[in-house]
Amino acid sequence: MTERVEVRQNVLKENDRIAGELRRGLAERATLCLNLISSPGAGKTSILEGTLEALGGTPLRVAVLTGDIQTERDADRLKRYGFPALQITTGGTCHLDASMVQRAMASLPSPDLDLLLVENVGNLVCPASYDLGEDAKVVVLSVTEGDDKPLKYPGIFRRARLMLLHKIDLLPHTRFSRDAAVADARRVNPEIEVLETSCVSEPGLGAFVRWIEQRLAEKRQAGRPARD
Amino acid sequence: MHELSIAQSIADAAREQASLNGGRRVLRIGVRVGEISGVAADALEFCFGMTVRDTDLDGAVLELEPVPVRYRCASCRHEFHPVEFLADCPACGSTGASMVAGDELGLSFLELE
Ligand SMILES: Nc1nc2c(ncn2[C@@H]2O[C@H](COP(=O)(O)OP(=O)(O)OP(=O)(O)O)[C@@H](O)[C@H]2O)c(=O)[nH]1
Ligand SMILES: [Mg+2]
Ligand SMILES: [Zn+2]
Figure 1 (cartoon, rainbow over the protein chains, first blue to last red):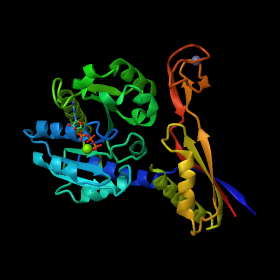
Figure 2 (tube, rainbow over the protein chains, first blue to last red; figure 1 turned 90 degrees about the vertical axis):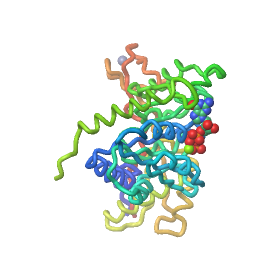
Figure 3 (cartoon, each protein chain N blue to C red; figure 1 turned 60 degrees about the vertical axis):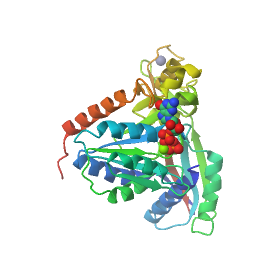
Figure 4 (cartoon, rainbow over the protein chains, first blue to last red; figure 1 turned 60 degrees about the horizontal axis):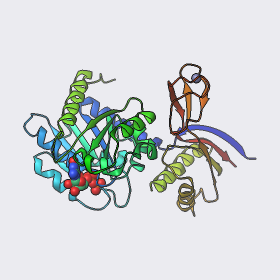
């Protein structure tokens, strides 16, 4: 006798459970967590370097986790700014999952943070499926990749709260249309916020750093949840 | 290529559900795969076969149900498959539609012996 049982559950339920634990832990400490996602080489590590540099003079407690399939290179770059920076080497896996982040967080010198920045593995597809307990996914689209990416990789643009149009200094050398990229991103995600950034010239990373400071202020206002 | 991790998650979820149902053998697993879930059906089937070989799930059939992106119009409630994610409602012409399906990745049923 065969029987058919209806089930309604997310395939990534176990990841979601751990992400939920992470999210509660972050909320208790009022830690803002951002998950940076882009294709390889779009500029995630460079943006984090600039951000750490900008936050260096502030009293903020910051830490960075950076995912890479093979190397420790990104963490080596990020360690120079005086904040803890840990590499998560995924050993072949094309995305970070919540358990990797949970293990890495346990190795940080202290869990008491204002800001946790996570650089995902360079990939526009797989990381989009995995909740890491973050407050927001930030998708980085560099202008040399082409303005067609939001419709080609709708999953990540749908789930991201913020899109950085990055390497905007190179715009004159490309056929990238910022209007088309923004319009297409808003087709898949009408709420997505957009900022333009560059690590080599104007407008710099100021808009992104201010965006982070606004989110930090919101997070602090939301306060610590009552324990039940 | 995260289909291998997804396949393992499906196998884990199926085992959990099967044990909740008296530990019976799993013959078939239904999974809904949204159009923008980022999962490639062929790769997932291949990885699933690899993951369950010589385990208690060996021989279980993975039945993938593709779920196209669907929008619902905010004005007239009409549901449609958008052209390149455009929110223009083909029924009433208004532009206020939002996505109601297409990004899921979920177990839908198990067939147990
Ligand atoms: N012109 C220009 N180049 C940039 C900018 N930001 C980063 N780059 C360059 O882009 C290349 C890749 O930058 P990374 O920061 O390593 O990119 P990533 O996204 O961390 O790369 P992966 O971790 O390998 O996925 C480097 O050569 C950077 O110097 C920018 O704003 N303008
Ligand atoms: Mg990097
Ligand atoms: Zn309508």
